[in-house]
Image (tube, rainbow, N blue to C red; front, top):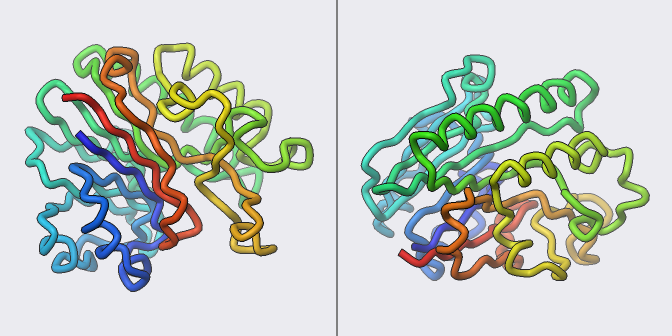
Amino acid sequence: MKIITYNVNGLRAAVTKGLPEWLSQEQPDVLCLQETKLQPEQYPAEAFEALGYKAYLYSAQKKGYSGVAILTRREPDHVEYGMGIEEYDNEGRFIRADYGDLSVVSVYHPSGTSGDERQAFKMVWLEAFQQYVTELQKSRPKLILCGDYNICHEPIDIHDPIRNATNSGFLPEEREWMTRFLSAGFVDSFRTLYPEKQEYTWWSYRFNSRAKNKGWRIDYCMVSEPVRPMLKAARILNEAVHSDHCPMMLELED
């Protein structure tokens, strides 16, 4: 099973930049999207249905904001929209598709870059998210939690750890949360397979950051411990340029 996660920073914009053509080459079984920034009726269905993908969309109430989706060539047994927590579900941040005993989630963690209020919201969300997925594990032990976590975990995950130490996305409390999250039975698939590799999934649009490869690794395919033996490959697809993020790919042995 091949799964790709991608923060597209506006799905309609990404389509105009060649996303469907790229998808026809990659051909994942499941594509987890974040920051779709559209309402379901604005979804460019034709471009993806022609490639054999059915879409499950969970949009924010606020137009042009946030939103997650799962595009899939395999029919899921069940799709769960949101976490049942209104303040988060209003922002369209979590969708889950079940395939047999395997569950694939597309999640978009909040950013705290706009100020203290959103940073506080992010920290509360992180605890609620961990609590939710820990509870979910009891009924769905094989979890794949793909998405934009908006956190770099270790200095190897960011181009300038010293200067960014006080920036949202690399704050000590965010990194400490991720350490706790991983020690609670979740696996960073890319870092597990490549302990020394320095690759990024996001670059600022400013300062020519992508050309200079001054990036951050904030997009992950996290898996629960029972999925670890199924890990076949995990790669960052940094040649895809439809967004300020690039996709990450996970392959599992069925």
